[in-house]
Figure 1 (cartoon, one colour):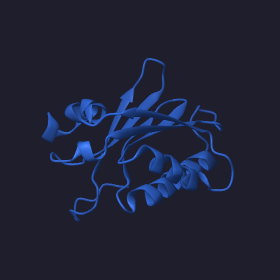
Figure 2 (figure 1 turned 60 degrees about the horizontal axis):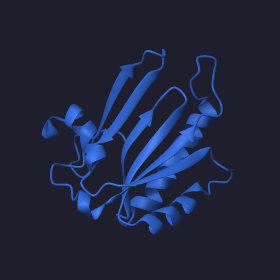
Figure 3 (figure 1 turned 135 degrees about the vertical axis):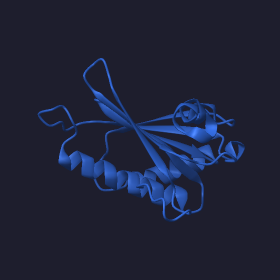
Figure 4 (figure 1 turned 90 degrees about the vertical axis):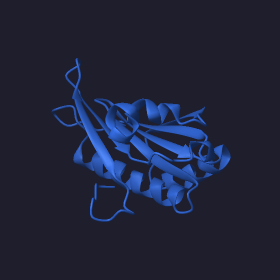
Length: 151
């Protein structure tokens, strides 16, 4: 998931940080899907919200929780992206939660695969939200501010 400019087939992520009025640090990790991405082929937008359960003294997720989130993200990408059923395109990190935004081809297939990715052992502190967004308006509303190709 890290940026790799040497291999064109590797996804390129852009990270944006912003200090917030509530003294929290807000991060956005945005995948550059390319100017010709077929949003109409991925009309279902899912938001997987992870509420932080273990915070350290600074109010940040504990090292154990960060590891669990990384393992979950890797498992999620493995089951969703293997045959291009869905694509993780954005990750928001806020003071109390992390939100994974995925674009999917099919609503029911996504939910079935999410259940298999969630099967990492213990119950995870996640919730799911869904919207149909065949034009990619949500993604583009951020990409136009962050990535030069859309601006």
